[in-house]
Image (cartoon, rainbow, N blue to C red; front, top):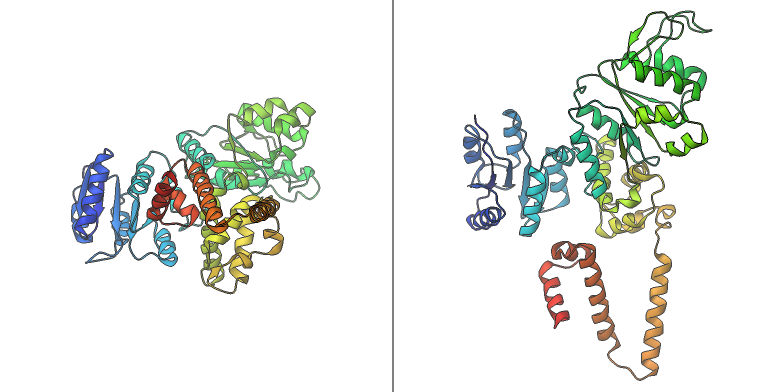
Length: 462
């Protein structure tokens, strides 16, 4: 079987096939069109594309069955689902099935092209889009997370040391596991140890193991984490809390590649890749003398800085949907879905606990929200009370009131029409500025249809 480049479009509507084929070819893609699942399965016997764009409801079968067809043939390519019968349950089901993206008809052609370009781009992005199925949490559309994905992709053929920094709850261990899974050591074990959670006097034995009788309570020989992680990855979480004496020993292991158990005489090979993480500023600790500079440079061969959740608010809706699906499945509860207005509230929260805090909130909402849909009132007051901008909203209302009173005193008329026109103008300009001029996304932010937004822009431009 020889691989074919290009995109396969699967839809029983000839007009949709024609429109998509023309748009994709205009964007530089080779395109082949099919009207049924059977036709695609027959074509897969001879070749396969870079990606498949398929309707869900087809005459002979569910378009999502193509995911199974690809798996049976061990073909790993992204599948993008389309449907004119969109609802949240079906969207979640599609992602659980493993689709790369889920598009609702009618769709914006620019959006389709953008999704296709992301789907066929090199890297591991497509694996992260479908991780609802596997329960992993390494998701994100934000530029900062895209850079993390690219870094993992660039390191996939290497086992150099990596230092991951970020606030508590940003997902440092999740990134460490992804680095392991996409590395030459993926078939070996992934062993994690939180150096801050183990008493200093026991940490050396935890890392390197000990021989029988080497200290009080050592009744038998014990392998340490370095031996457990042999041929794989050792993840040292909260490395900034490691005692200085143990930092010295760790540095020797990294420099020489071997070690002794506590009380041992046999030299053992340290066949592990080290990934370290901390929420602290190690450069500051180096200047203070509480962290060895030479160890810092040994660990910091590659540095991955994870952004706090407040700086990647565009990822909150995706992560929240993931966590709600996970919790419902774990607890055997009905899946619940966030209302758009609830998502907007969550996107404004400061999230001091980052992704972990969002995960805990979703667990609480899944258990406590009374209905299938989660409304703003379902968000606990201690959370929603933290929404920044409430004061600004009050000031905005005060300014509007001052303007209205001034106009009325001066004999002004048609206040509602004038205020509404100005309000729409400001909101549209801000939304277009936020989306870089992309009208489809701006319309979604404003809660308008694209055609409605276009009409309003034309009216404003007069």
